[in-house]
Image (cartoon, rainbow, N blue to C red):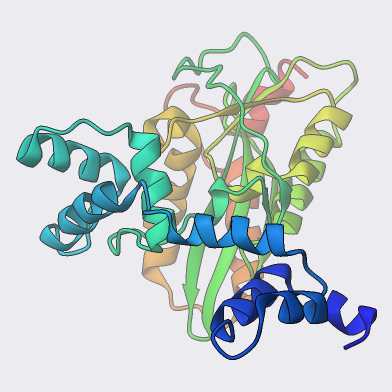
Length: 296
């Protein structure tokens, strides 16, 4: 066998070949033929014959895993072993052993948003700067951004909006057949078009992938907008924007059946125009834009 042929065979495979045929051929001959030294082969045999130092702990991990009906992750397995056997194993060790055993909890799927990169680019997270304090002294201080879905006979349509918390005006919105970052960016650009830089706008959003994307980070930086993120699963952190969606659904969507995407665009555009220009707010006794024009 030539040098190139030997090079294509993994070193471990060569050691296993020598070990397999050691009774039929002299080790020196097979070693020379496969291009490995005898000392390296003998060192390999010592490693192979050495007992697995993790064997006992692996058995404990497997026992806990099976007793939990394969639902436990590494933290619960650590607790179970300590409770049932009085043995404390570091949770990082339990995780390493589970990976060696190729087992994981069947109760949870892998979360793609825990990866460093997702389909929208690198993940950016932001602190919850508003802390449910939605009070403002004027326009373009605090905004809210969110996404909802609209049912049509041909499937779902998605709507992204930007709302100014000062006067309630919907500054920008966009609809799409997909829950995409492009839809969010389109709504943001529409809202930011009236800003005069520099600006001190804070924009509240949830922790959706669109709002954690590099594109969203770049766009908000471009317009001098500071992102703020709600706590996970806490819709009250963006209550004013959620309130608009409630009005949209109660005053429009639950009373009509929408045929397709084109009709959804028409009816939503029409409602947002009504909401901004004609719908009187009880707090101010003015429409959002009437109140806004007193300050802008």
